Length: 332
Image 1: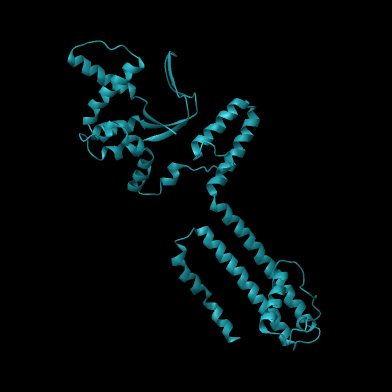
Image 2: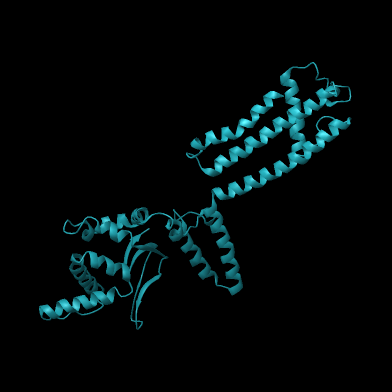
């Protein structure tokens, strides 16, 4: 009996395991703890059932006497005790024989009540843990159910529904052939908001760094080295399906669309002004680039003017072009 006091040291064991638990997923660690708790209670309950029979001197009406286990080995006695314990905890039955003595009746009542309650709590906790292991997929599934209900309520056409499904694959999928069931949804803004600004800048710049590295403007030795990181951290991605309209000039005389799926990285007006403010040498280069783009798109016929007027016109055109957004694109 005095050895049972050593079991009170179990909380110390859990404290020791916290150092190793940090290297694994918290959900897996919690599952292991719950399974360990279930086996621990099954062991205690098995010892209790055998103790009750022992206090009755292993009489003929006890479960040990009915099974002739008194002279068996310790392993055999423990195996049958554990079987009885798990049978009560899982509400499978009384074991091999139903109780025939009053002490065993109360022991089994205690075993079934506490064991079944513990097992129900463990099953509920395991379900919650398994769901939390893939919370992003559960969020996407809930969103899809709500979106499907909205489509049915508004009687949305099947073509529009298909476009929405294709967009979700492009937005949250890692592969074009990936099914909707395996997609994961997350909000990047709320996900990164608890992190410090330095880490947020590094994470956000990772998504667009490969695009800026291919751009000669940001790789030029003429500009500061931190220009690329500064711009990349401010770019916001947008996803477009094939034949989607990216921009439209009013009146409806000009519009730009994409032929395939792509991701556009957008630089807002305020962020652009901040970049130009801290890196003024970039403005002249952007003006020249925009001039070439405008000529290529045939949006406007450039006329020859004096050098001063031409420079002023370029600056005004650049401001107009970046009035809403500046967009860079990369195929997905």
